[in-house]
Image (cartoon, rainbow, N blue to C red; front, side):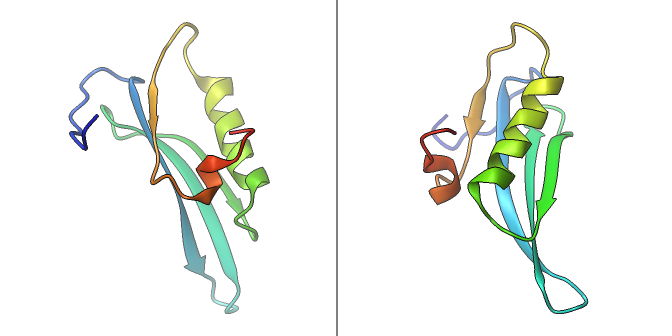
Length: 88
């Protein structure tokens, strides 16, 4: 993609990331989100108290369950450790 993010066809480029947020009780939560480049819609989202492989895989499973049949896409990540897991 060469960092050129201008997809116009839905479901061709999917962005994903994990965000850490502090809760009012001073604990942390982790939000894993997958969004469509063309439509900017959230396609999958999961929240956990742990930034682990299970969080990432649940998000990917949610995306796959709702993805149109026969669609091929590029999944763009920040290439953090979450996305370098063998299962991912």
